[in-house]
Every structure is written in structure tokens, then in C-alpha cells.
Image (cartoon, rainbow, N blue to C red; front, side, top):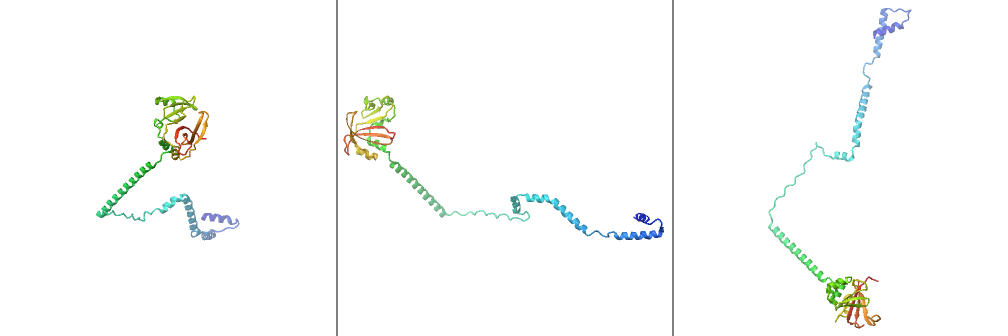
Amino acid sequence: MHEDLKRKLDDSVPEDVTLSDTKKRQILKAAQEREGERRPTSVPKLLPALAGVAVIGLSGLFAYPYLMEETDAPEEIRNAEENEPSSIEGNDPPESTPPPVDEEPDENSEEETDETAEEDSEETLDESTDKEETLVEDSESQLLTKEEKFIALLNHEFYETGIELGDEVAEVESNYPNWLEKGEVEGGLATSYGSFMVIRAHFETKINHVNLREFTQLTVSQIEEVIGQKIEIVAYFNEILNREVISGEFILENKRYVVIADSEAQDAKVKEIWISAYSGG
């Protein structure tokens, strides 16, 4: 530093001016003292503040990702973590329930229990008995269909054979070979078994009519009472038979019944009943 000042001093002095060494030393000393006064004697006051700001900025920069992770965490997880009891704060264990104390059996309570059980069993027995009686009453009070009641009223042997409308005549004759005669009747061919006939139409093989006969005490009014219908008995001249016919008809459970009576009176007796299928209309 001294050499540098000396060189600058030599360069600044004009050539026609000569300085002695003593004068030069004085000038150099004064320059050094002035230079020393310009140097800062202490650290600037702003340096600690700037350093603190830098540290805070770097801390925020490094902490930013962790803060973002904490912010992005689901609210449910944060709530669970907040509500989770701290391991530092001890949780008191739940109070244990004391075991039940065995009590001595009460003889009176046992007697009451036995009496209650007996009463319950008696009530159950009474209920089952009532149900059985109700079932019996229901089965006894169950009414037959009108057709069944009508069949019971007729009390005819035809219903003991099991023959039905639509059966094959050949099978009927095979199963019941004791037929009396065969012949032609109005509208078809008949096989007679005495008290009844089964009839089929010409060129047909199945029964389409049944004729019941040999009634003795059956009246039209009895039939009306059972079926719940009024039978209008009228007399008309049948040209095919070439005679007068007194008859009336009714429909019962998809069957058409034609009653042949001996008169038009209220208490007319039934002579024959013709049965055929009824399809409506």
C-alpha cells in the first residue's frame, strides 16, 4: 500500500519540481492517515438485519412443500388427528362393571314362576282347543256347491257311475256293459241303462247329453229351493215328438238342465231331466 501511494505521488509531481525525501515522507504519512480515517471501524448496522431476512426467506422456501402437504390432507384425517387423544395426557380406563352378586333363590319367586308357567300352558291348551273347534265348525258349516246339493237332492244312481259329459261312448259301454238297449232319440243316438241314457250326436263319439228318469217324489219346487232359482214350467207342442211337452230349464255351474214335469202346477212332479253342456249365450 505504501509503494502504491509513493508511485502515485511521483506521478502527480510535475517534472520541474523536486521534492526531498523528507518532504515525500511527510506527504505519504499524511495520505496514509487520511486513508485510515476513511476505513470503517465497525461492521455496518444493516448487515445483521439483512442476514435475518435472508434466513427467514430460506426457511419459508424450504418449508413450503411441507405446508402444502399439510393443507392438501383430507379434512377427515385432520379431524381424526385433532380428535385423537394425546399419548401424553393419560386416558382413564373405563370403570369395570362389578360381577353380579349371586343372590339366594327366592322360594316365593319359584312358586310364582311355576304358577305362571302352568297358566301359560293352560292358555295355550285352551287356544289350541278353540282352534280345533273352529276348524271343526268350519268344516261342518262349509256348504256344498249348488250342483252338489242338487245332485244330493236327485239321489240318482247315474251319479254313482262316474260318467261325465264328454266321455267316449265306447269306453262307457265297455266299462258298463249292462246297458239295456240302444236306439235313436231326438237329435242323436242313445244307449239306455234303464234309469238313465247317455246320448251322442250323429257321427260323434262323445257323450253330449244325459237323460235321467224314474223319479217318484221329486218336485219342481224342491229343485227351485235347492238351486235358488225360479223354474218357469210351460206347456208346448213338440212337432218332432208329435205331442205336448211340459218343461222348464235352468243353468247351474255351466250345465243346462231341462226339467220335464207332469203339469204346470206349483207342486208339479219331475218326470225326466235332460243335462247338456252350457257354453253361454
